Length: 93
Ligand SMILES: [Cu+2]
Image 1 (cartoon, rainbow, N blue to C red):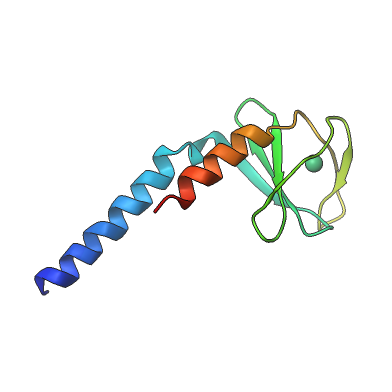
Image 2: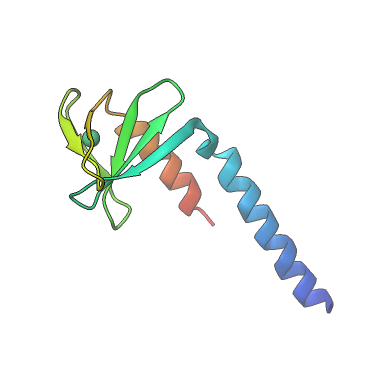
């Protein structure tokens, strides 16, 4: 492997580690919804959402959401700030 190639490989590894350190581990599950958005649920049970373009979506607590497989989930919390900060740090590459 050339020096240049191994430097690129190291860079990729560092990027992957940064994404984990940014708090991605706080998300316990991500569920696709019928309207094309994705709901992320955090360890503490609270949720945040993003649309298909990765933009953070605001939703009032208690609103009901329908998953692609037809289940209904009630929105718990509205962690827009948390998801926004997390996405921002993921994009800083
Ligand atoms: Cu929601």
